[in-house]
Amino acid sequence: MIKENNSAQQQLELVYIENLVPKDHILRKIDKYIDFSFIRDLTKDFYCPDNGRPAIQPVVLFKMLFIGYLFAIRSERQLVKEIEVNVAYRWFLGFSLTDKIPSHSTISQNRITRFKDTNIYQEIFDNIVFQAINKKLVDGKILYTDSTHLKANANKNKFTKEQITQSTKDYFNELEEDINKDRVAHGKQPL
Image 1: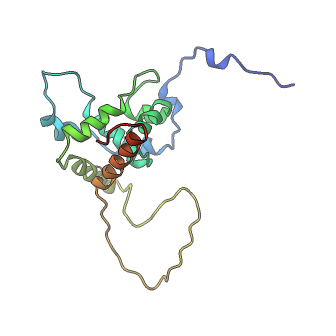
Image 2: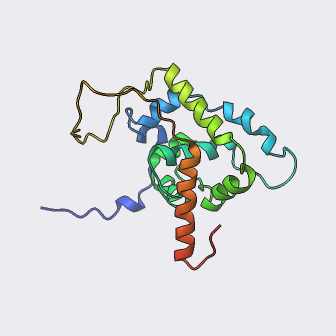
Image 3: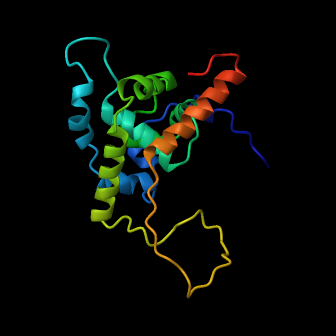
């Protein structure tokens, strides 16, 4: 006999968000080994301590962007939607299940006004990569994919070693393009 379970959505439960995130989740490793507190010092000159509206903590803002970059989330609007429903993302950012997630426009405005024409994104990204290398989380020699088997048409005896740098500006340029396409599609002016 099949029994319908209609009451689960209205049930009150006491849970720890800590217990809802799988022990082997990549964000757990990142949280354990990467110290994001350096972001406060790097960004302190961009914030006024006693004037204006309360700001998103810079560590949270950059962790949000880090999630977007790490999981290839192509827009700030989509990033906020993903954070709203993903328990692991909320845990990583320090949000409870009921905390309101900052608006996508807040992220955009910080990117296009407060941090415009700075290299703050690159400094933060470089620091995170440096920490990851020091903790042996990455070495640049092995590429992990989503478990899809990839075949290459390549000669194992003929190759060149190259170090490829991809700027965080590339990621933000792609974000900007996607935002402008979305704005035009909704009858708004591009930024």
